[in-house]
Image (cartoon, rainbow, N blue to C red; front, top):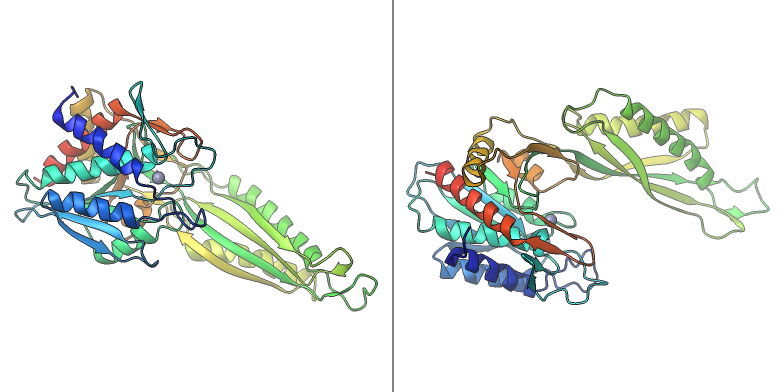
Length: 384
Ligand SMILES: [Zn+2]
């Protein structure tokens, strides 16, 4: 893209969005949250004739912004989804500068993902003037960096025939990624003075059998048939706590576990695997008291390569860049899975950058322009 009015608008908008802090308060106590940014995004979209609502999420004062460019009717609808929250800024010298240098825009959230948010906003504002048949819905969501309460709220009220998440992918198209589950297994012992083994029962010792079971499960998962794109499922212990003090039998121990899943694995099946570990510890020791809890479950993303949103996006990128993009699987989980599980085929396609959770974050301006042009072309074709 030459230095056009649109390119300048895009850069200016990214700068504006980076300058408004929106650190996720669940990650950093005292973080600003999304409200100020949400009001700014809402105002910007209203000024460009979109019909805008602030949608409540599960947390107070952390709304989504939904802007709709209404089509004439009879066409396919498209959601452009981007999150407003960022991770913290510790160690960064000037996190909200939005400084432009060497073809890059710097600052917290530049690549993750205020550039993507700006792309979605500007594209939707073009839709408002493009006389399309289908609706274009820009969804600026809260809390993607923590528990995704934003996209969870979004899919309760909003549907579309396709969605693009403009999260940074280096201009690759991501159609698949793993899902995950978070679990806790707690063992119960009996607190007693260390000199009284006749009274006490060691909850941490009991966790030994659980950890061994997890280790065996990890090996077994690795030997299962692999998904062609995403590889093998996996499991690991993440956090462990237990005990009161050095001279006592520990009354409690708990281990929190993460399980990464591949398409085809069900919530029930994964839960049963952990239940089997607990059951075999019980069978081996009649004093063992262990309990399994599911903390969170997130589906995989596994979009058909011939889904219309994929083919339309691939065609548009090819038109804009002259080369066919890579269509890939990614390792990390995204909000796209929430949309896909709700029946909205969602792909991830965004610009290039680095330092998403690091001390120097930047986004490449050339890739932002390419991404914007490709999203615009997709919108014009998909919603025509
Ligand atoms: Zn992100």
